[in-house]
Image 1: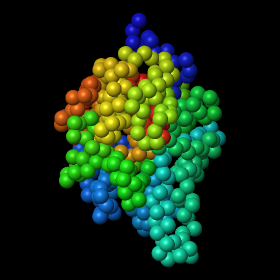
Image 2: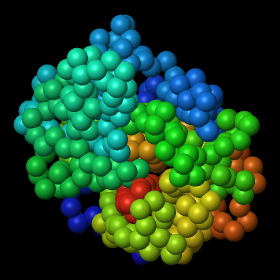
Image 3: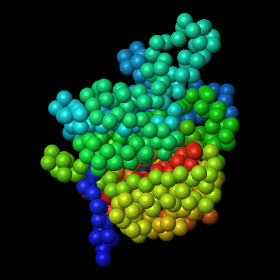
Length: 414
């Protein structure tokens, strides 16, 4: 029996027909793709974090700052919501979908974020402390509430179907995509915009992560994020958004739109072990991988590639690599984009899902940026140095979050 024959999805296929990205590698799919394939680190000193223990980050370049008069939406939407809107607009254009002509009642929105409009909350809290209640903006709550990015997309695109926000920490974007898959399979929607957005590069968040010992340090910000490297010491804060357009493959075919990939499976689990550390045995992560494969109707030896969570924390990378070795062996190629764009937190699962879709569609796997001396304790086919050409029939992307949240997505070649 061939590997392809073992993959027999029991449900109608769900296609990815559009992608949108806003990341530290650039605004738009092509800029992000070129940046991660070049293995180009984006971490740099951040003036807004000056004086903190860790004063560098991975910012989205060229994106209007909060309050920018040139961007009217900056006065009513938090930065994370504006990231989501920009990504969604690109994704819809790529999918050749016109919101003016669709049945909005059959369109759903599912977005993930760990912290929502935390920048707005911090700014307004400082204003109240410094100047009193009268100086608060009436847009505080509409900008801060985590569900408002999903709401903003629904308003802009006339999407009247399920409009959901999910929060599973750094797995949020992947959880949102898995939820979108479920909505399509249940025939609740014909189209789902699913993904994640995050803008947590604030002084409070940076200081908090530093206190946990989670952030990378060192004299050279560009080399600080180094997943799977023996010298890794944590992650670099990033920001951005990723949005995927999901629809049934038969509907895409009827529109004569060729899918980029098929969203074949989703698996989720909880470690139920520790608030911030992964379970040492990796049992929860393994369960999520196995559930995604079962959902996709695939065996472990069907997996050609894994876009790993790969944050660059000493324990996290070691546990993840051990799980991959135990579950999938050493055959799949493995990468992590966090060396290039940092850890985008609640958006990471969606951004990395989009990169995985591009790898499947284009037959190219980006390298792990800054991976110069692989940890000898890690047994994996790590892609390093330059991007690798590889035909991918089935690829996984993994996302793990505080609270022991695990989410794994499986993408197949269309």
